[in-house]
Length: 238
Image 1 (cartoon, rainbow, N blue to C red):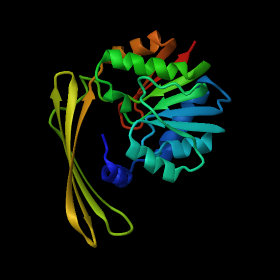
Image 2: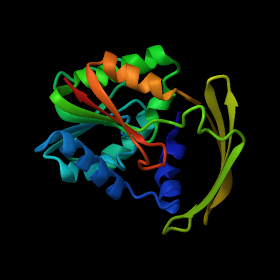
Image 3: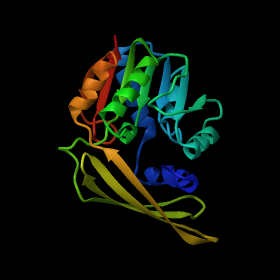
Image 4: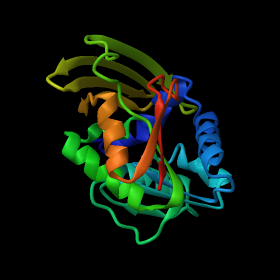
């Protein structure tokens, strides 16, 4: 999904948006410990560049990450040299160990193509939980909350003068969002570059998430709000 240069500018754009990974990680840790006091270990699935995992590592005695993209995990490895990171697909990974908590943040779960893939991913995550462990999933928009035709625009600048302009346009295609993202990247001593990324993110129903959690052996709950306004699904493994 993200090539090397897109992975490199990913965090720059979201920092400019004011995304507070530290506060989000602290809120998720609090949700976990409400349900499992004394939780000490966490696995962050689809950890991306490690922006949340960096803070989870400070909040838990043992924190690890799983990521499919080679380019994203390369950024995470540079950022988090002491944190175990595994390359893997959330639909079929097996680390051979369990955790008090498993997280899947920033709507990464929406990249599952259908409910069969959603079930596979949630089941794999649940299998990495200790009995009584907590699974936290940040969903994508639901069909009734998605805004077709939504346009977002951001400009970000780093300390070296590199500037990134990002514009996205989202439409509905069947049961999914099709989001086209265009970037212009300008640096002081390089020509302007134009990058394009097209994402397909499934608009699962609320019941799809709760059903997947139940089938995975977790008692589900939905928490309004969440880091991006899309809420959080929280499941406790029986």
